[in-house]
Image (tube, rainbow over all chains, first blue to last red; front, side, top):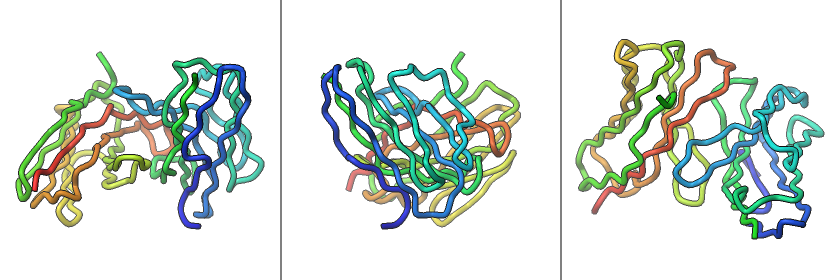
Length: 112
Length: 111
């Protein structure tokens, strides 16, 4: 595997379900990010982890819970989501906290 | 006024034409400017990265920044059907600051 990988690529869940998104980077980077991409809206930064420590939470609702066990792995735990949370969730990484970020392919999430 | 404005398109041009993609911004503190390309069902891919004003060329791509006008452009020469994608402009004030993205412009290159 190379670059940034994300699983699953597609996820359909009900509002009462609990699921997790996984991201793994194979680039030796130290910073990882979660973004939300909705139709006709700019990419929205959700969370930033730098050397496994959360350095930014962009006012994200508590139904989204990130976890970063090490610099290579990032999870986004989901529970009691709303239909408006349906979007493409993108993970990215960079060598250090900064703006040369490499993105994964995303998880297309649909909340019914 | 939104921080970054980008026309969503779609923009359709014939193969071989020169494409011009643009963004305007309101925050004069922005110094780092990026262009990402995003193919359908893929994540964004960093195309060009520039600091401050001026031009940067990489193959068929040229990024231009005019800080006095708060205006950035991406030019694609000899456009190919494989250039069909959504192009996102992005910018930040400092190297480790949050990146602010435009909404993206959908580009179609017609064979």
